[in-house]
Image (tube, rainbow over all chains, first blue to last red; front, side, top):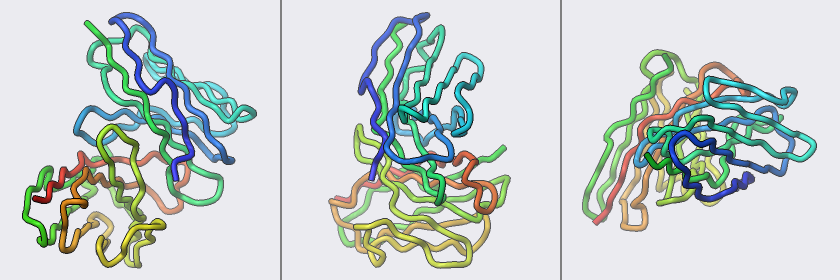
Length: 111
Length: 118
C-alpha cells in the first residue's frame, strides 16, 4: 500500500521560480528518497536522506526531513522548463527492503 | 554508473499472448530487483521483489501464476505476463538495487515497458 501522501498533486510555476513539494508518511523509516519521472519514462533517483539527517542539498535541490512530523519537502530552486516532470517521494522502512512510493506531484515549469 | 536496461519499451499484442519483459543491470550486480506497475497519472505499485537464485516475493493481490518472475543471474530478471488480457495493459517498470540488504541505497530504474493488450 502507498503510505506517502504528497502535496500538491500538481504545481505550475514560471521558469526561475522555486518549487516546493511536500511528502508525508505514516511509519518509521530508515531513509526517504526523492525520484523524478519524465512522462513515459522510468524513475531517476534525485536524493536520499537518512532518518538521522534533517537537511540535504544536491545542486538546485534541497530536501528536508522532519521525523517528528513524518514529513519531508523537496525544494527546487531557480526552476527550468526541463524540470517539468512528476516527482515522487519513497520511504524505506527500518526493517525490510522495499520502497513505498507517494502519489507524486506533477510539476510544470512554464518557459 | 548503475544503469538498468529494460526491454522491450513497448509491446502491443493480442489477448491471450504471453509477454516477456527483461530487466538487466548493465554495470553492476543486482541481487535484488523489483517489478512495479503504474497506471496513468498514478504512483508505482510494487508487484514483486525478485531475488537472484530464489523465488520472488509477491505483493498481496498479485497473481503469481499470472506474473511469472525469474531472476536467474545477478544481472537479469524477467517478468512474463502469461495469457495477457486487456486489463493487464499498463506501464511496467523494473528497478535494481546495488548490494545485499542495502536498505539505505537508492534503486535504479529501467525506462519501463508500455504493454497494450488488444
